[in-house]
Amino acid sequence: MNKICFYVIFLSLAFGCRERAHLIDFRSPFQGENFKSGETIKVQLDLPGSLRPDSVVYHVDGRSLARKRGKEALSLPSATLGLGFRQLRALVYTANRIDTVQTNVVIRSGRKPDRYTFKVRNVFPHDTSAYTQGLEFHEGRFLESTGQRGHSRLRWVDPVTGKVMREVSLDKKYFAEGVTRVGNRIIQLTWQEKTGLVYDAATLEQTGSFPYQNSPEGWGLCYDGSRLLKSDGSNRIWFLNRETYKEEGFIEIYDDKGAIDRLNELEYIDGKIFANVYGQEKIIMIDPATGAVTGEADLTGLLPKDYFKDEMAASNNVLNGIAYDQARKRLFVGGKKWPKIFEISLVRN
Image (cartoon, rainbow, N blue to C red; front, side, top):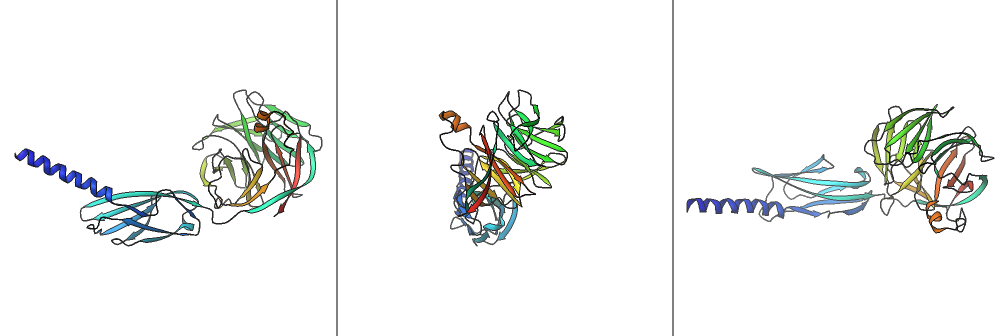
């Protein structure tokens, strides 16, 4: 009998502990709730009526945030959290125990992006065999990275004639992606090979390579004067050390509606990141400090919709490529296997 009684008591205590932990939860915010940056988030626990915590310590993404007494609610300014997916955790302290509960929220941009259309200023010829993945303008020349396995190249191009001035082919195992220049070096990404390639800017001779770290793929690349900025097809832009190519952080890109995924070719222009969104006829402008989308340019109609007769070709050969002539303030855009590179100006709606 004694053993049976002990077992019953043990089960009752164990069940009671599990039941209590189950009863403690977040009353607000609810799981996955969205907030605009700048809104105040009311954080409050739903506790069993008989439970009187000594204190509750709140954490955001593992960082201790605040300590409250009992059932006291917390007012959390969302602007202090940064944009993106955030984990909230509460440690509930009572006499001889700690219960832990958590929930998640998403912080999106608190501002609507400025809207732009475009005006074509000039048109330049472009090699229709070039599957443009990266494009920049340096010293009167286009620097272009072209993709597809077996066809990936790195080249300097004369903008006026569209002719290739110097070019190297990549090993057939590589699918080339974004490209940028840092001083006398050129850095080129590959897509799924998790490898970046380094070249001499004058000769295009490969001088090195580096592995990716946490970013799973290589899409777009640009240079802001101190760091490399890399996209990976998600809504993240990674910051890389310009000397070691090590990842030193990232931002998540959000507008006022939510995350902007499939970020592709990048260009750094006057303090903002310009980005293609893969498969869409638009360019977005991003605040590099926060990840907020500050502007969006609709480039629909830049290339006639019926240029690519085949439906598959039309779906693959999309808008991609942004270059900027800093000296003359000229903005160039192009696309995969497009016949033209367009110099455009943006017109505010």
